[in-house]
Length: 318
Image (cartoon, rainbow, N blue to C red; front, side, top):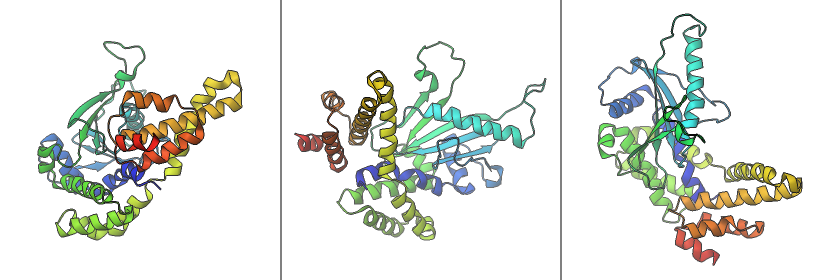
């Protein structure tokens, strides 16, 4: 398993673990909305496990004061969050209608909670403190007033970002610090298991997530060590590339399509790893995308997983 690859994804389930208790979730809600609710029982958890085919493990949804909140932790940059939000919100509203025995065919307009979708991003790609992603930006044909819209507010929670928010929610600050500490330990060259052990000990000593880490130490370690399966990741990427290649190569025959798809999958896998290291030069992107040698692409993938910087990768493949 590649430490670089693991670094991209282990935070997701950890986010849900840290904020699964109502008290912590209410504190996060207050910090974001500048409110002062103090009764956790005013908050109703509405999280749906394994939504559709997405199998989300990093989302939390809840109701408070007629606001339907969907919070999601993400360590990999994804411009398609609004589309995911549409899928997820649809499931949440269906559950709401069913739970409250509402009749969607009623002659009276139903009253529904207001949706609010927030993504907490802590990947290594440089992103602003806050930004709004819109579903309509993905529409092939743009309209001034789209018939369907979904907005996702993306908040950068990497350590040192959004200081006012971190100050308002101590648990978010501590979560951000812990993630940063694991990264720092990994950068020293130790194994992921050693990095987690060191980060846990350090944070407990500094009273960072102390109670949580002491209580869930084994669970936290297990989540981080098992969350990311590189082979499964590559299988999905290759499958995506295969589907694209199969369509492109249908006229030339199925076997050719399979080969094209596998190559496309390897190219995407290499670029995904490099994007976590920083902006990828256009000439390097073109070099990777123009390469059709599967064996060479596999070598490049291994080099990208081990590289510390874009320049380091370029030296390895020269």
